[in-house]
Structures are given as structure tokens and as C-alpha cells.
Image (cartoon, rainbow, N blue to C red; front, side, top):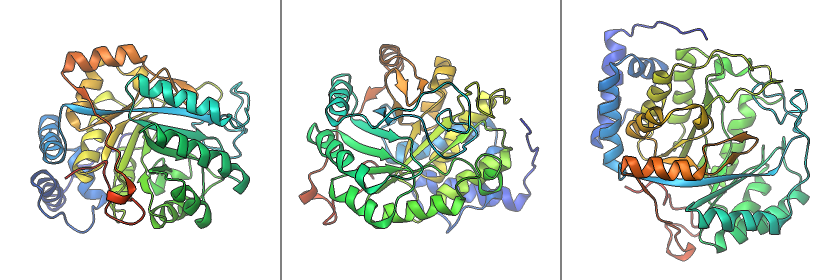
Length: 362
């Protein structure tokens, strides 16, 4: 993987420090994060960056609590998109068979098990370019059923039209996940069947419908440090920035174009978590795909850097995840508690649609 050895100017470093200090102290952040600001954060000494991220984290969250999320693939494979990292694409020969949408009762049974195992958030993912309207009826039943268990709900279904986002909100959906994947500059090397603007348009429709936004990206795709900074800048400059920010470490799958890509340096990954925390201080920063390839010490550093949610369970869409029992033991050794459910009745929320940002308390 190519790394850019960028030495920030004094002005860039000062701007980055001003932004980071504002985030760490609860002060007003400047209007926008420049890519140069974020590169300057990457260039800070590791201990200084970690200290700053931990300060920011403690301003807004209990540093010894994480949210346990479970992710279920409710429709696997057969996706029309050509994302270079994804084994579910019809463009790649990965041996993954396409399945139909899971029955509602099977999804609800999986959600029940997830709750019994300690999860407070349940995310459902379908491998579509965009759902058809007929697909939404069973998915709305899934959302209602999962919410009835007291779990926070999230779905990721691909691109949405305005009326589809509104229908999901009316079903009670808490979060919609739609990742940017990488920076605008590097994006064309990863996917050609969907534009960056397509992704931004879907996110705008989700936001306008009153659904909380879950949006992050993947590192280790072969991008440069500056391109990683470009992804963070895109996320942090959203108005408002996402309530939920999953940071994925590429899981290489044989048969995909990115199989054999040089892995990201572990400390660079931790830096990315820390910078996500500094630039988006009230967001849930989710340690997502790729945890199986991280040792316990690296995961602990990610928590110190400000990650406060993990995907929990034995399977994460089509790739394996650390076993739930191993997760429980690690969290216990670190003195980290699982977050209790924080569902808010709609009538007590801050707006008539129940769209208060309860996942990111002040």
C-alpha cells in the first residue's frame, strides 16, 4: 500500500490543533475540516493523538462502556454492484451463492438470540443495489418486530428513493447505514457502478426522512494516508455528521480484486479510529469488519482511541467475526461494560418523528 509522507505546514498543524482542541474541550469547532487538517492529525505523535482522542471521548461518553451490535445478512449475494472488496458482487467469483430475502420469523428469531446474548442494536443487511418497493413490506415487519424487543434498529439496503426512506421511518427505523467506503479521489478505483453522489443523495434522503445516519468507510483498500484523511473529512463535514460511524478494516476475500492487497499498518488503523473520534466527537464510532484479524492489544487500543461500539457475534454479513464468548472475556479483562438499551418512546423524543439522537448523549 502506498503511503504519502506528508509533512504539514505550520498553518496546517495549527488548524488541526485548533480543531482537535475544540473537540477535546467541547468548544466550538471550525466550520469545516480541511483534508490538510486531518493529515496533520495523522502526523501527530501517537501518544499525543491518543490523549487528545481520549479527552474528546470522555467529554461525551462513558469511556468504559461500549454498545454491542449484531449484524445479520437478511439477503446474501447476487448484488449488481462491482465493489472491489465485496464477495457478494456478481462481478466476482468468490463461490458465494445468492440467497432470497430471509423470512420475517427467522430474522426475529435471530434478533431474539442477539438480545439474549447482550446486544442492544440489531442491524439487517441486504445485498441490493437498491430495494424494490415490494421488498420493503417484509422489511418493515422486521423493523417493527425487532423494535418490539427493545432493540435499536438499523438496516442497510443500498440506494433509497425519498418515499422508501419515509416508509422505513414510518415503520420506526432508528438508523440507516450507507457507507461512503473511501474518499472521493480514491472511490473510482473501488467501484464503477455507483457514483459518490449517488451515495450522498441516499444519505440526504435518509436524513430528510428523520432517520439517524450510520455512515463510515473501509480502510486498507490500498488508499494513501491523504485519501484516508479525505474520507474522514467527507464524514466530519456532513451537516450534521453521522450519529454512527463504522470504521471497517478490509477483510480480504479470495476472488475479489482486492485480495492480496497490502494490509494497513495496525497503528495507522488506530490513528484512524482516534481521528474519527476527534472530528466527530458525539458519534458512535463503531469498530466493525476486520476485528477477527486484530489481536486483543490492538482492539484495546481502538477502545482507548474512542471506539465505543462493536459488532458482536460469530458472523458479520459474509465474513467471520470474533466469537461472542471471546468478546465477553476481552471486555471483562479491560473493565469495559456493555451498554444498556437506551430506546426512547417516540412520544418522549425531541421531534414528532422520534428522531432525537439518543445514541450520542451530551
